[in-house]
Image (cartoon, rainbow, N blue to C red; front, side, top):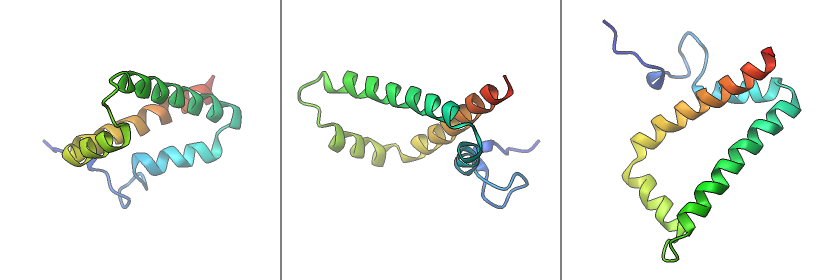
Length: 97
């Protein structure tokens, strides 16, 4: 049984790209209103996360995010790939409706 997962994908695979590259392909070809709506949802989630994190007055968001990124880089890369797939799916789903 193969241990392949979408997270092992590279730019030379059968699908010609990574989750990130496919996401940007979809962004370039989808309706601008759909892309705008999906990016607005993404920004809203980011704003909510920043609000939650900044409730702690001693939290330096840029410094602490960079530290966390360094300490958890592999997990973050996997989650980024998963999010690219999720948002690509959201845009494609709206194109089909």
